[in-house]
Length: 384
Ligand SMILES: [Zn+2]
Ligand SMILES: [Zn+2]
Image 1 (tube, rainbow, N blue to C red):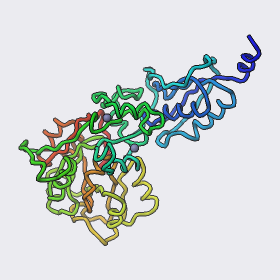
Image 2 (image 1 turned 90 degrees about the vertical axis):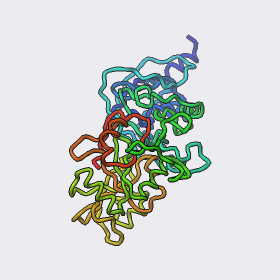
Image 3 (image 1 turned 30 degrees about the horizontal axis):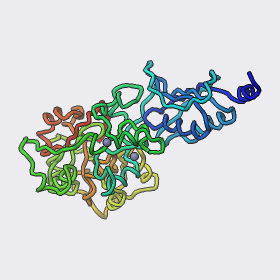
Image 4 (image 1 turned 30 degrees about the vertical axis):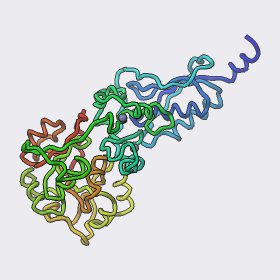
């Protein structure tokens, strides 16, 4: 062996790194890929049943920087519980760093929950020049469905209900571009290749969409809510029932049909500005409302503007959430007041998750259905 090769051998090291925690479906492999390229390392990264598995090789100093950065620059939705390191075999010179196919092993890893639409994706769906203008299933590495579409671990598109939708050329280019925020985003989709939404009447009669909207089915559903109808919406982790929270007749009808007597209904508002017209919003509540989990936050009613009496009879608080999917953002765009959003079921029954089940069980409650063709793999109860 000549001198140069000896020096290289001394200065290089390799490690097998195991990352445990909520690290699948959060853009962890792309983040590892970027770091490896930043530090000039070679090797591979994969998902498996235990989390993320990395074999990395290169100059020892760079490898240390890589491991430090791994924890500091983890993607926003990731939660690292533990990083385990052990020395590993050096890899051949000239190799690249690759994201490899997932290893199917026994499952001991968690899956991240669905995450509310990120600001970048919201901007896209309201930009008339964007490819995903008004696309109700827009998502990226930082947001979108996870738990509700996963059928198996490791988390790859083939193991989700997005398997049914083959990527178009444009989405495929985003998926394979390391500089794109959709690099390896498993549920990536667009108007051309992804799921679509449509409207149905509960009685099966045809709908003249152009009497409701000049845009699309989601916008038509908004008109129906404004006209006092109850609409069943296929949400992220299950069906929901919606109506205008300012319309007493609609809310009372929903209560009676759902057989829910007094328990307050949750509300969804277009944005924080609308919430503030009805509630006192503290700083921590504002942060919660805008967090990726987009939970229902119970706040004190401020008394200035009121929702109709049947929303929350006899209490001085209101439970609000902000839109958590592009579909809900689009639905609420023209709604200046909140909507009631409650789980799609009769009281004490499980929430519907399939279109046929919803048509059967909710047709006595809702007058219209806003449906789509992405299957919900598991019920994710948002306790509305
Ligand atoms: Zn996003
Ligand atoms: Zn596409």
